[in-house]
Every structure is written in structure tokens, then in C-alpha cells.
Length: 392
Ligand SMILES: *Cc1c(COP(=O)(O)O)cnc(C)c1O
Image (cartoon, rainbow, N blue to C red; front, side):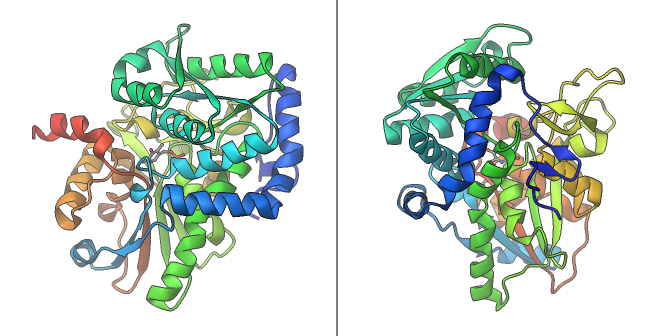
């Protein structure tokens, strides 16, 4: 009901709205991804790498001081402890194994802030595959440390020089590349966005997060289900992973946290579900921020990872059906929550993640509620932002 149907739709959202030239590439993936993921040797290699290379299972940590402060029982799912510092690596490991089995020799990706580019360059180095990352010229200048990481990992970072020279232009370059190299190249998309089967494939790779939460909670609480699962949403991949095994169990309430930027109605936000209207972006029908005549609105958030004008089709469906509650958090609220977690628990979160830690002023929980928050990433990459904001 809440997961994808056999046509590639979540309710009315999803599908594959792509130029005809891209059809063979996407169709090859669509026909093979479930078959490949079901192969025992695939599962074995995926699980082994998640364990020995990524460092899974990530701990489920009972945050005592945070729980005391908000008078409820808060567990943090520690995706911040993964190799490369966030959940994104779960997906890139899965997709590089997929690419190998499809006989691909060359990997392309696009990146905005550079986090997905780094996760992709990492797995390409691991597998000895050629890696090309498209990035807007402006973003290359803004995200120098991640550009350096990608280069050090052996990736080629190619600037997108057209349009606003940011993420959407990098995406156009990657699509152009894929059309020109349909046989030997796989395009690694970094979230639960893009044409079917990407949203479903990425959700399945990230589903390891809720698979682990189930048995970890069983050990700690004597039941595999929490009362709430909370995650921040940019494209929606860490949330998809944290929600996945609970989607059909409506006793588990789902909370998706979006970036309100300077305020939902300030004109500078990324609260996509609340502000969005139905439209097509990056090959799927979903909710996106747009003007009355359908021009995509520039999103804004202090966190680069939530700064996306659309949301994956799964989340559009969760929003439309009311299965998940959507809460938007401003820059200021997120920064304050990031500082609070640092000082209450000794964990500096990514600013994306800090949004989901800021919900307690918007949402009251009962004392005996079990609330799992997906701690999607660590804050090392955001240190300069924290320094500037708090004048540290
Ligand atoms: C990229 C990123 C996000 C946003 O991406 P989703 O696909 O919505 O998960 C959230 N948190 C961190 C730490 C990220 O790096």
C-alpha cells in the first residue's frame, strides 16, 4: 500500500519520465535489478562489505541525557559512524555491485554538495572502476574539501558550465554522458529520486537501516517496533531506509523532517512536500516546488544535503496519504539542535541530521514512547558552518 507497485509507482507518484534516448539504459536496469539483488552471491557480497568496509551494523544508541531532557525514550541510529560519515555509502556499495554484475566498466554520478560524489568515488576506488563526477562550476568552488577528497580517491571531477552551474546542470551533464555511453556506463544516483527503478533500488539498499533497527530494538526493548521513527528528508534516502520495514505497520508512526530554511513562507526554504505541487523532476512524478507556470523554484537550506527542490516519490506518497507526518525545521532551529546534541551526548551531527533533532518543540511525545531518530551523518563536514553560525 505504501511501497512501490509493479508499475513503478507509489500511489500516483513515481514512474519513469525520461527522454527516449535514455530508455535502453533505464530499461536494462529495470529488467535486472530485482533479479540481481535476489542472487545469493550478491547478497553475500553486499552484506560482507557493509560489515567489513562500512562498519555495520551501526549501533542503536539510547541517548539518556537527550531522553531525560525531552521526557521520552530516544534512540539514535548511528549512521554517522559509517565509513565516510553518513548513510550514503550503503547505496553506493549496492549500486557498484549492481554495475559490476551488469558488466559496466565506468561509473558516472552528479553531486551538489559533494557528499554523494565522495561516496561514489570511494566505492569506485574500492572496486578499481573509472569514476566521473559531474559538478556545477559554482559548487566546485564552494565545496573545495569534497572536490579534493574525490580527486584523492581517483575520481575525475568535471565541471558543468551551463545554466546556474549547480546541481541541476551537473545532472544534465550526467544524463548526456549516459545517453552517449549506454553500454559500458552505470549512473549512480544518490537518493530515492530519478526514474523507476532508482527510487525502489536505492530504498532497498538503504533498507538495511530499519532491518537492523528491528533486531536491535528487539534486544533492547523486547519488541521490534518503536512508536516513532524520525528522519530528515532531502531526496529521502535515509528516511526511506529507516522507514522501509515499518511502512505497512501503521502502529509505527513515521515523521519526515524537511528544511524550512529561513521559514516555510519566507521564499527561502526547501519544505518540498508542504510547498510542493505535483510535477516531474529528474524522471519521476513527485511533489516539487514550482512557480504557477511550472518553473522549478530554487530551494534554500543551510544544509547542502536538504537543499533539493523535489522529494522522492515514496515520500510524496507518504505525505499525500498522511502515512507520515511532515515537520519543517528552520536553519536556526536545526543549528541549535546540532549544538544541543553535541553538548548533551558528545555527538556532533551533520546539519541535515540536526533538523530531525529539532522536532521536540513541534511535537510532544509520551514518557514511555520509544522514538528512533535516524542520525544520518556526522558533522565534521559542517564544522565551518557551525563555526560561522555560533562564532566558535
Ligand atoms: C545527503 C544527506 C542527507 C539527505 O539525503 P537523503 O537522500 O534525504 O537521505 C541527509 N543527511 C546526511 C548526513 C546527508 O549526507
